[in-house]
Structures are given as structure tokens and as C-alpha cells.
Image 1 (cartoon, helix red, strand yellow):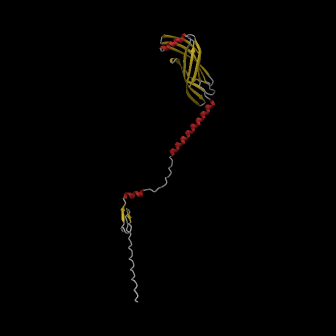
Image 2 (tube, one colour):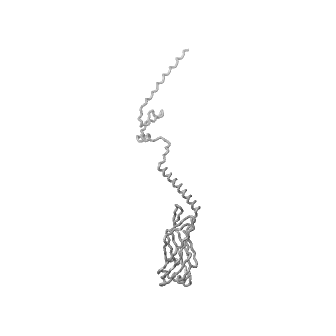
Image 3 (cartoon, one colour):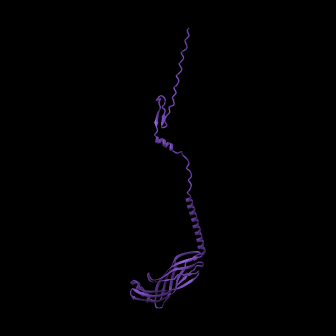
Length: 254
């Protein structure tokens, strides 16, 4: 039998063509296509503004701690010193107040004389009243000075006379008597008050109200403070011309 010749050998595959690297501009994006669809590649233009923006975007970094302004520190220190000073003086004032126990002076009218009351007309009257004003300083360690002293005389709520006294000083536990002479001249009274005053004179029982307004300055060493003081006294007297004090009720408050 004849032998078959060997099959012819296949020719070697042709060498694959290598793609040359084509330089691409920096503002273009190369998109490669899958094989079998399109062998070519497509480049997309990037606007120059977007490219600049991407270059300018900072990288994420931890924020640096900000230093406090020295002016802020200075103001905080001043506020702290001021607060501590207020607290110190508040505690010192409380201690002094509890140790000294300051008291207000006392106003009183221990004696009074009603010399005259007469009417020129049913609505105008004249009067003459003298009384003693007693000022007492009950404090053991505080001296006081009466810088302003005004004493007013009222019949019900109608002012009938006024007198002011000269300023004076009182030492601790000191008492001072001042004579106050108030003359009422042609003082107008409404018809009902005029009739009431005439009725009281006839019944031998006249009631006046004495009101005192005082500006007091207290002194304790280098510490000084001032306040207003108000004294109220209701005095009951017999009829003129020899009217004497029968009863009184006095209060003194700030």
C-alpha cells in the first residue's frame, strides 16, 4: 500500500501590529472602545475653566487652631478682677452690717403748745403752734448728720405751715431737742375742713399732723452713706390759748 503524504504545515500567524502611542493633549480624555465594536478611540475635550478649577481645589487639611486675641484675654482678666472686687466688698459690707447693726435716727414730739387759732372768714384761718422736736441717734458706733431738716404741719391733708432747721451733727447715743414755732397766716381751708377745725376748738380737742423730711448722712470711720428719713407724728392738744399736748403717736421710717 502506498503511504499518505504528511499534511502540509500551517503558515505561522502574521505578527500583531503594535499600536503606536499617540500623544494626546492634556485637555482631552481618551476613551477606549471594546474590541469588536470600534477599534478606534474617542477623545473628549475638557474645558479650560474646569481644568483650572480642578487644579485649584485644595487638599483636605486639619484646621489650624486660632490664637485668641490678646485684647480678649485682657478684657477677660479685667472682668474677673472686677467680679472678685464686687464679691469682696459685698462680703465686707455684710460683715460690717452684722457687726455694727446700724439703726435709723428717731424723730419725736414730746411737748407742744397751741397758742392761737382764729378765723378771718369761714375759709381762712390763722394759727400759732410751738412744739419740741426730739432727734435721737440710737447707734452705738455710728455718728449721723442731719444735712436737710424740713418740718411741716398739716390739718388732715391740708398744709398749714412749714419750717426748716439748720443742719446739725449727732454723736452716737446723743439726743437733740429743737424748738419749732409754726405760724399759720390766712391759710385756706375748704369749707368742710374749716367747719371741722372750729368744731375741734369748741370741743377742746385739736388734732394736728407733723411731718418731717430729713436727709441723713451716717459716718463710720472712712465709710459714709446718705439716705432719706421720714418722721410722722399725730399730736392731740387742748384748745387755745393754753392748749397743751395730750397725746401723740410718732413713727420714723426710711
